[in-house]
Length: 103
Image (tube, rainbow, N blue to C red; front, side, top):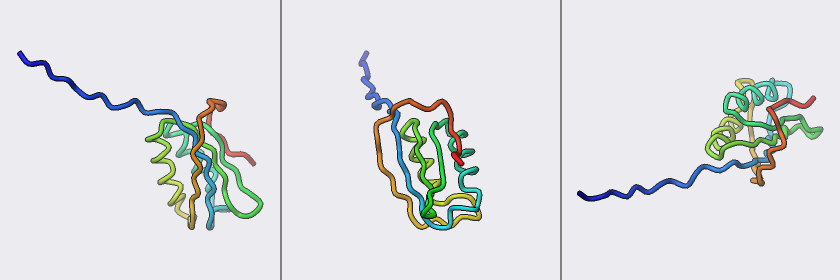
C-alpha cells in the first residue's frame, strides 16, 4: 500500500485593510451598505465619511473575505460611483468587536 501525502494549504490569516474610497460615495448610503456587507462577511472595523468627500474604512478579517470586501468597495451600492479605492495592508490588531458606521 502506498501512502499519499497531501499538501496542506497554509492557513488563511487575519489581516487589516485601511481603505480610502473616492468618487460619488457620500450621500448615497455608502456607509450603511458598507457596514451591512462587512457584517455579512464577518468583518470587524468601521467606516466614516471624510471632509474631502472620500470614505475611509478600516476592516479586519480573514484575508479572502477582506479581498471580497475590497472588490465590493470598488463598486459600492447602486447609487455610488467609485473612482478609486486605495488599500493599505496592515497587521490585524483585533481591537474591534463588530463593524459600525461612524457619524
